[in-house]
Length: 116
Image (cartoon, rainbow, N blue to C red; front, side, top):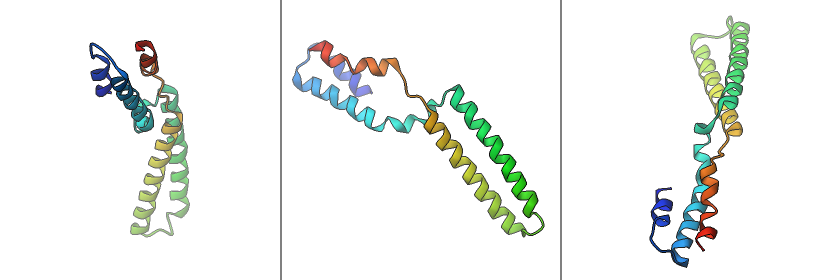
């Protein structure tokens, strides 16, 4: 986004600089999903925490059910698999519920037409 502000602060604009601004915005919107996990709001975080609690309960039931048949190495493998599964499901939950709604980002999409 630094590029955007750099171009937008030019004292004068022409079609080339406006196309640069448009390109920067397009690239930002193309790749903004990488910020999704960091944009999980309170509701998304609460939902993810509830999911974690539910999955941890299932893990404990699984562990108690199979405790007698698991060897120590099998138990370690199963617990690692559960940890990875829980972590993945939490990340997916946060990503799906994340909100990337910045009013400033939306306003920037109108700058090109306003400058013209």
